[in-house]
Image 1 (cartoon, rainbow, N blue to C red):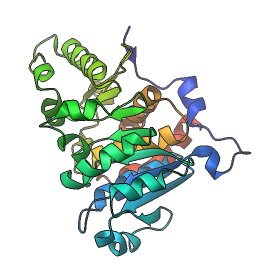
Image 2 (image 1 turned 30 degrees about the horizontal axis):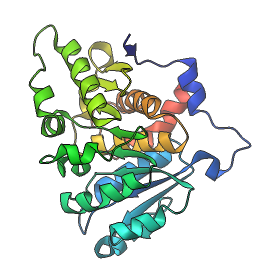
Image 3 (image 1 turned 180 degrees about the vertical axis):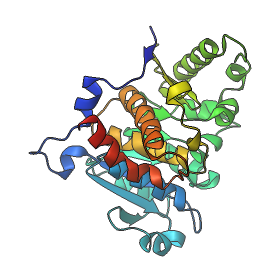
Length: 287
């Protein structure tokens, strides 16, 4: 049975923080950044991961953009990451428990970094360039993904990775069911959780668990149609993974929070507003 995503007591409890816990008790997320002039998307994701409650968040930037990132960051930490060998070195630290790759990463850097990240067997969100980099060889990606991974494609990225499944999507009264079926098939093929973004977001795990989040009707959030909103969603999910939620629960809770923040802010929303609205969402739901 497909789960209809809504606020529950369990979700509220998963977002609360114990007063006795220290920062490492809430995980350390690592967000990989692209080159010079391409770091904004990673900053959006990192800020969202921090706002959703990750204890620490670090951006890993190439040398060419290190000082650019340094000028923009305060609460989010920064480390240099010149190559995939260095990433494997960073992952020797077990406290780095969640990774985000894709937003603003650049396809060439993504093709190098994704295998190293997946080698680390951490909870990992792959989005944007981390997906598009493998459009010509998706099986090469799927042989490396594992059950701690969450893929967060929009429809265009889904078509690139799963062209045959995209062809099965209906545009009539069966559209919702066909999207759920395609997302479930994609999750089985990739061996990880898949979140297919849209006004009706579908989420599936390799073992057949499915969920649906509807941002339509009274819960519509049209202001999310803005550059960078998807990067924020990736960061929210990464932060929840760092806090210890399962990939499926992180995706479900992240989808709900993403829309709730947009609805709380309202018209005029830009991506930077989403992480800054999360504290009000938490207050509103009693976290």
